[in-house]
Length: 488
Image 1 (cartoon, helix red, strand yellow):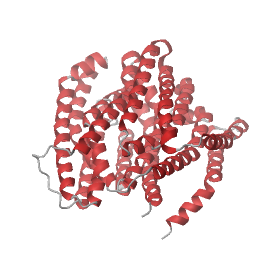
Image 2 (cartoon, one colour):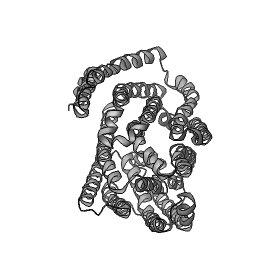
Image 3 (cartoon, helix red, strand yellow):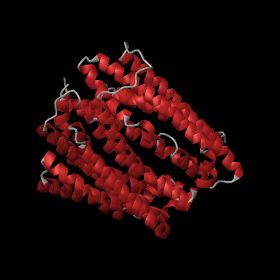
Image 4 (cartoon, helix red, strand yellow):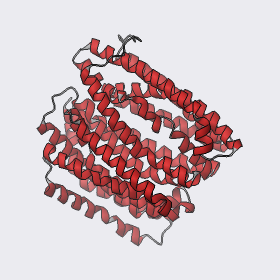
């Protein structure tokens, strides 16, 4: 399979599961808020901070990225001894850190619940028990991290997407049933998420055994090769910076503003997070596409510039649509109580637009063994964001979050200095592309303006129709050429 076909295929399946995940979240969030209330919904988000979705992921030691980078390469080169050594060492190390993570959560549960969350005795007791359960589930979550990265390195994106869609379908069915039968509460949600993590582990394990049937785990192996150690250490530095960058807002909001504000932010951040996730997953599809090929500057430049063009044509019109229709979307989705902070959503969507310009560049530089530059960018970005957020949150509340994100993007000046040299970016061509897509996208406002007298559903339907027309207009030549190439 050619590089372009493989990249398109991997990106498609990543994007498919991301879109489906977003649909399920958009359905489940209003149900959870209505059934639990804003405070308990915020507590769910706070508990997730102490799972692999939050700060606990720092303990992965950069191992998952190393697995994704080297597993497919070793298998393709038939270096089976190196592959089995890497997998055995990774399993042992991740098992040890999962135990450490669980012990740390259990030992600090009272500090987390009473001092950090600030909960009362009755609710605090419930949350402490849920944190103990979360500590146990981390064993499977670290296993999922290992297996998912190994499968993606073997280009099993279709299967990984299938598992994601299956699990999200089970999740929403259980939530709907519990809400209908009046059994939906905080404990039900946390236990449900934990049980689904175990099911994911079993499904990933089944596929992993089929893909590498001769692998035999050797618990005494802990050693990585020098290249693996260097990549793992560099990835860990980047991971710590990324986790601080992406999770510090939740810690700071919870501490300064409380659970209700955390719930408000959790809702408003879902839409920008979706865009960032689609961009990130699309970029990570690069790794198995080229890990087995020699990557030169010409190929890297082609991948970066074409990927950036694809993302701008796909993401920018949707971002503009969400900015113009944010009040309508929030009214339909979660109700009028969130309309007071709709401007906050617009700021966060502007930040999502800026993240497009990092598409795949950090990964390509990493594959070219230039992780130090990437890590420097991430550290600078995290420091700026946390400093701005802490200094402003007491004065302007939740609005400090998107402003801190926007300020942190100033670090992109450093990153783009590297991109310009490495990928031969043509700034004039890029500027013309942005302006053409932006002008086409801004016509959505005309549809919004002339439909103000209509109901929310009709207004949104007209806007979606206009958005679809713009995307087809921007993509029609590229879609035709891509599908012609994909024909056998």
